[in-house]
Length: 229
Image (tube, rainbow, N blue to C red; front, side, top):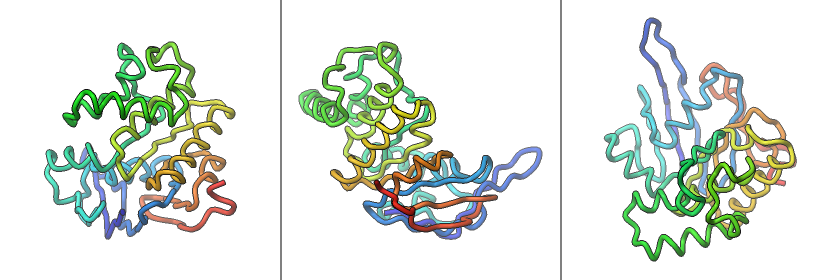
């Protein structure tokens, strides 16, 4: 599913900053992987490269057999519409749109027919346990419910790769556990490849594999003891 080979990412400015320094990494289809590391270790940069939001300074970023490093901005945008979806810590819901409308947004952008959109939205809202919240606005929902809406929006395109950036970071322990349980269920039932950035060791334990970054390099990569609970 993902293969990064000799990936470097450097940002130019008053001083040159190397965010990633020779990353070599393979993540197979259907894996559920956590990425951890201190601030500035390159976690977010790595996630952005995996999703085609950015390109490396050098090296290959192969996702589903396509080298995103060689794609144009338009090509990467088209890739993201069908092959990758995102969950963010801050939800990024449109405050004036109701739950069903927020979830439907990626399908409208992809030009999916209205009747098909309605069916897909209803299906994923049932999947995340929000079929009774269809007409609510985001500010009428709890934090956990908002994250479920964000997850439903990510699932509605049936993208094979799900990238999650601190998905439990804004939630209390109970709501965070609900979201982790939902992600494990998605991984198990759909076979979706999930890559999750987290600072939380408990959240990382929901995954089967843990990659640790430090100073833009892979410091450690291995199975999580008791992972995927």
